[in-house]
Image (tube, rainbow, N blue to C red):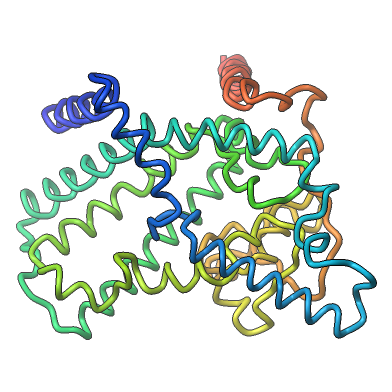
Length: 344
């Protein structure tokens, strides 16, 4: 175990500082940034942006025909100035611009190292100690079933991690950065503290490692059954169903049946609401079944007028990019100090 940890630290160290070892390495890392618009594993890929825009247009046309909109243009409907010129949104744009750069320079190497550690530890446990042999071949049906199983496992871990970041005070200190947005626009999705990003990666590491060990002997062409354009079919389809509307003012629900299975944009908008009816509801990421099983589901029926933000935020707690990065550390230290004092 000590050797595994040391190996992990060495790999992360190598990756973490690789971008800064030479100017060419730094340019190569920064050069990856424009690829976010063509990399389908990234939420900013053009198909997801275009699909969200198309869904917004469809919702606009439907509302116009139903007589729920007066003389409002599509631009005013989809990109109202009161939201996109709001101080919270302008802060989101600044934070996202800096954070995307840091993602390729620092966060990706760290999370890659965490994933490698998960794979190594699962190999050590499953193969080295339990004597389990990864399959050398699978039928198409078995590959589909395995892919569905890993999707469920991964999403369940995301649900549990999300709950932990709400329920554990030290973790909430970092997750509240995301909930500090005062208005919902797609830029709000990128107001996430790096501690939360890395924390989620660490909690996902066992599932990622198990998947890596399970598929290590399966040829790439066999796995293509469950893939499209290099990403999972399920992830691709769900991302097309309004991923950028999740953090927006545009209400989009999947209806009474599919809302019980999948997280619609309306689900997550409700999750950000400060209304007591909505507190600690809709923690799911892709699937809403976990909220249904554990009693945290709030069904998005008719459109609701929502107020978002933090009721307990200090007036200047989240005014600058620096405060978004730094203030959670001060709050978490304060929380830990109080906890230790109580126990003492």
